[in-house]
Length: 120
Image (tube, rainbow, N blue to C red; front, side):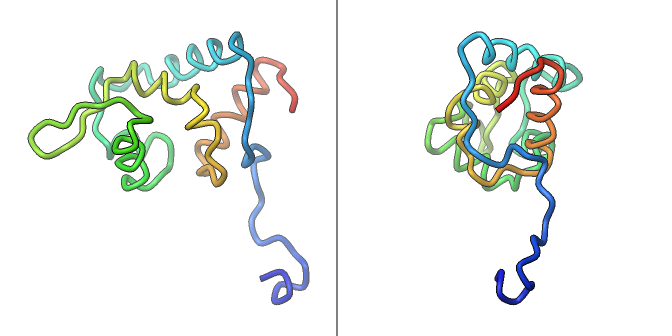
C-alpha cells in the first residue's frame, strides 16, 4: 500500500484512532458529554440509530451486542439498546479500545478532549 502511494498517507485522521485510556473521572465526564450529545434520541434506540450516530456499520453494533459489550434487549427479532447502556458503553474499554474508530467516533472523542483540555 505505501509502496504504491509513494509513501503518502491516503486518509487524514482526526488524531484519536488509537486506543485511548481515560481516568475514572474523565470517563464520568465522557458519559456526561455523550448524554448531552444523545439528548435528542429516544430512551430505547435501534441498532441502526446507534450505528448512524457513531458512524459505524450496523453489523459492528450487533457484534458488540452479541459479545455482551453493549447491553441491549432482543425483542421481536431486533436489538433495542437503552440509551443509558449506550452511554455507558461509550466510556468503556470496549469502545475506547476500538483500533479503527469511525470518523464520527473520532470527532466525538476529539471534541470531548478539546472541551476538557485533555491531551494524549
